[in-house]
Length: 276
Image 1 (cartoon, rainbow, N blue to C red):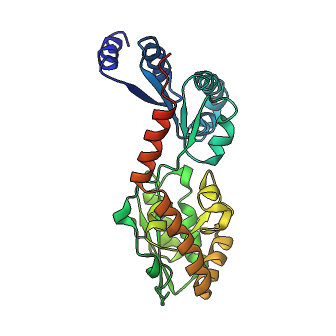
Image 2: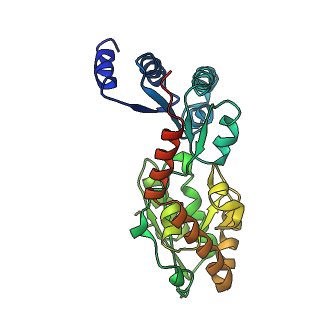
Image 3: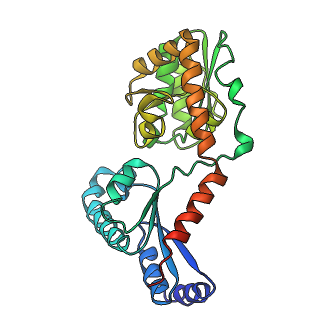
């Protein structure tokens, strides 16, 4: 840390604006030093830190870690009183808006205009037998990938699933798929919307908000393969529904391309530039 601070100070001398993501203890230190040197400081918040940490620790470590996480969260929120803040999604916006001197809610969709399919193509592709599903995920406990094998077994013949992702549960997913008699093929929301694909997703985290509470995709409870299968069958039987939710998703993706998000961030930073 002592060796790093002089390096930070040299970099700060060349900056007009500093965008710090967290909560992270090092970000707090750098934020104070930047403020003293007249550099505008903005915060970036991608998740509710106590929940984020709790989901990644063994149960026995959670009480102690939770206390530290809440302390760090509180320190970051105090910093937000003078540092304009960018958050990801409306759930975080509700948490931070009462405390932030200025706040921008940004989805951080990593798509650009070239990723968008033509609107007149959205929802027009027929669903043929077999119906081919795609999921993009990390194969770790947080994402519950074992649900995918249960889903495919529930759907039965006429459905295939390709998994794009890897992680510590990959072997277990493949083994479970074998036991259930379904084939696992290891291989996200904004990419699917940009591609004009109808979406079925579990209502966890910020997924429901991103899908407009079901307006841009069908939502099902987590860990319920039966409800997930029902939603997919509903889509398979209703071309008009597929077309409607896919088109609404594509329209939202068009509003959230990288260039539009960059423009919003630049406008936010320019409007709320603070150096004191």
